Picture 1 (tube, rainbow, N blue to C red):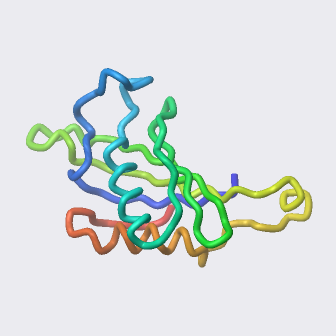
Picture 2 (spheres, one colour):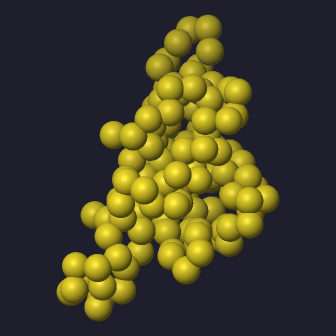
Length: 134
């Protein structure tokens, strides 16, 4: 996979109430996807509508001329005091053409602009902590 994983902790997003429209009971991330979409658009990126997958939510986005999928899901700590406290993962997957794949071109790097932008967005939000890559 041509991707990088960003992890963080927060209680800002829903990890406790399973929506009636969830494909699976673990499909958390809808509110994270909507929030991230709004923030990225405010920074001038082109971002599509989020959609549900069987493991969480996905958000198509473009940064400059590069296209990405931002895949997100979370796991609750199952705390008795705050059921929404937990760890979230955003997988930043860079799309490549068949030609790029055959040539080994267009691979995501540690300095990728989309990764840096998502990390920055998460890092400046006071309710989000422990932002790091895996």
